[in-house]
Each structure stands twice: as C-alpha cells, then as structure tokens.
Amino acid sequence: MQNAKEDEIIATLQASGLRRFFAYCAVFVLGAMLILLAFVQPPAFGWQVFLILVGAGALVVAERLRRATMLGLVLTERELRDTSGHVLTELTNIKSVDRGAFAFKPSNGFVLRLNHSLPRAWAPGLWWRFSTRVGVGGVTASGPAKYMAEQIALRVASYR
Image (tube, rainbow, N blue to C red; front, side, top):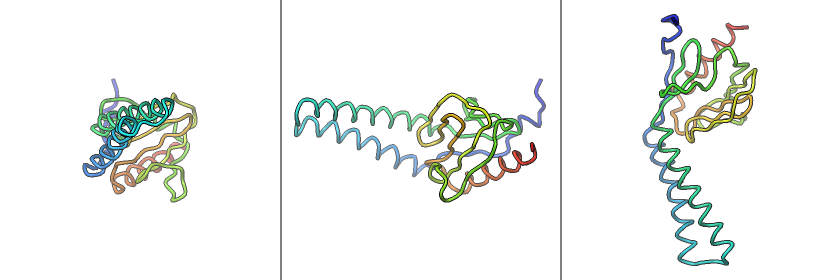
C-alpha cells in the first residue's frame, strides 16, 4: 500500500481555455484550408495529394490537441502524471529542470532532463517526451507552470 503522503497532490497544471480554443482553431483551420486549396485550385496531381495528406495530418493533430488538452498534469511526491493516470516520469528520474528563456521548451513551460531515457510520447499542447527530455507547457498558463517547475526543482534538489 502506498503512503498517503506520496499520493498527495502538490501542484496541478491545466490548459488555459482561451489558448486551448485558439490552438485548436489555428491547427484545424490550417488543415481545412490545405484540403480546400487542393480542390479549389488543383495543382499538379503529386502536389494535390501532398496538400490533402498534410491537411488531413493537421486535422488529426487538431483532434489530438483537443483531446489532450482536456486533461491536466498532476505533480505528487513520487511522479508527474496526467489526470488520466499516465505517468510522464518519476521524480527520482529527473536530473534537472530547465525553464530559462533560451531553453528548448514549450511556450509557458519548462523542460525536465532525465537520468534515464523513456519512450517517446506526445500530448499536443500539453507535454512531450523524447529520450531524456520531457517538455511541459504549450497552452498552459505561465503561473501554474512556473510553480510546478519550482516544486519539481525543490524535490529534485532534495534527492541529491
């Protein structure tokens, strides 16, 4: 049985409603316009197929963004996970937190550098994980993201 303190929520991070709507609309309109362009002013057949495929891809990403941003992120003493229970990383696997202005990070977010590589995963607009890095942010508000990053940094420093 897990300790109750380990399951206690330290910080949460949700997608901002207006940013979520704007991001979804921007990606959806891009996909719709590419498909429309392929049929209204058809270029050569190869380019037409390319426009349709890229437009369809943008529509798929828009739907994934809509679904992903319905969830949020939860920080506990043990892990960082989304509200559906999918674990992004254990806190003991985090080497450092990078939230500087020149860091390769999502908008209004931060990057976690990990000790051990994890499988790639992506929740558009909320987080991504590639090898030994986890990026958090995108359509999130900057205040709660900064608080979460500071809480993670405090806990990572205590593990050393």
